[in-house]
View 1 (cartoon, rainbow, N blue to C red):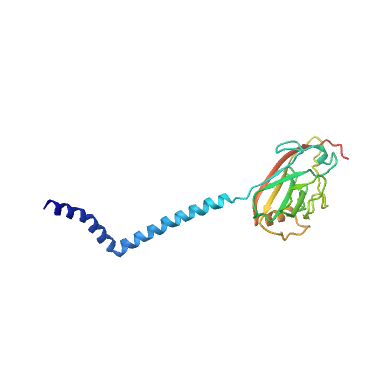
View 2 (view 1 turned 90 degrees about the vertical axis):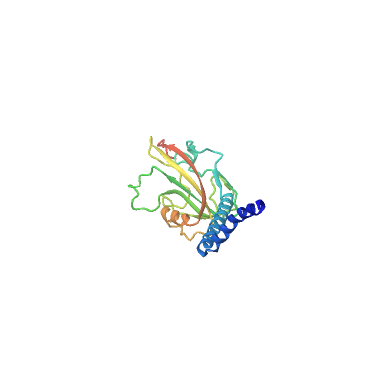
Length: 213
């Protein structure tokens, strides 16, 4: 009698679960809960996987560091030659590179009728390139600059004025940007934004001396 009583108590919870699951609404709820949990685990797995594949690119120069004053030789007060750059990237997803050099303190009111506001623009640079040699045009499409030419234009602020400048290197997922050489800097940025994987910036400053060469 004592044993049968214990058995009846042990079976009651199981019988309650069976009866609860026999309700189709309750069974559907359990299935839905399982789907939500499994989907969440899959999402977490994909998120961790994608973050581990994040594209990282780094732009540096042996001539100056981020936040430094740009050496005079790279300005209109010096030789107006383009600096040497080193490029480090860790992803096979990068197909091409692009670089834009801008004057952050440019008086845009002065150039309000011109879309050519960059000091330098180059795109469709092969992803295999790891160095921009000093004074050498990078391989790729050279865009029209603020001076109206298609070359590097070093900083040239008025004498005594300090301007901030930024070199931005972009890692892109496309083999070629469909942007013409006569496109303005904003058109280039818009095209880049659609295929940008990562970017790296070098910020510098320069004070004009007024001693133009």
